Amino acid sequence: DTVKLKNTLAIYELKEVINITASLNIIPESTEAFTLVKAVGNHPQFIIDDGIDNNADNNPITPLTYITVTFSDINFLGCNIDFCAMNGGIFYNKEYLTIKNSNISGGRASSFGGAIYNFSNALFSADQLHIQSSFATDGAAIYSENTSAFITNSLFTNNTATNTQGIVTFANKAPILI
Image 1 (cartoon, rainbow, N blue to C red):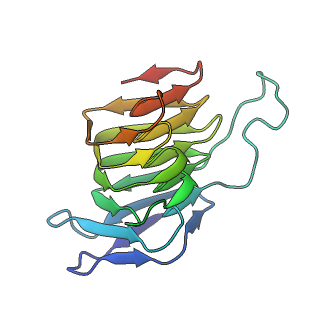
Image 2 (cartoon, one colour; image 1 turned 180 degrees about the horizontal axis):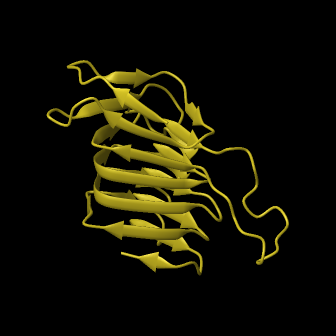
């Protein structure tokens, strides 16, 4: 399914987290003007999770299944308070998340992934993504835990991690392409 957000001069303000539990594409009606989504309060904007453990039987032969969620041509703005969430200030991902041609600013997490937190066995893909001014203890922009990640043509600016872990942190041995 595809959800088309109206291009508007107003900001889409999310007063509570949006839980995405099925495959979905989220795009603006038109790419002539960017759509802006902002969190209001202490919560990530989106939790992407179908509720099924992607590795329930811990058997490497069993194929992992994911819902696929894609955001394109949307700007995301954090909560503008000390911390939006413990992990994943904008996105908390347990599935297959793709972000294309978008900007994320001001994601703030008290622990991992100021903008994006990828839970164990999740998948993450980004192309033409700009993450700026995000903050976390580890992984100021992105924190991925045993996650395959594919990041191309993307930019990270003015992000801050207070621990020795960097701006983009991969705490795993999964494939990574940057």
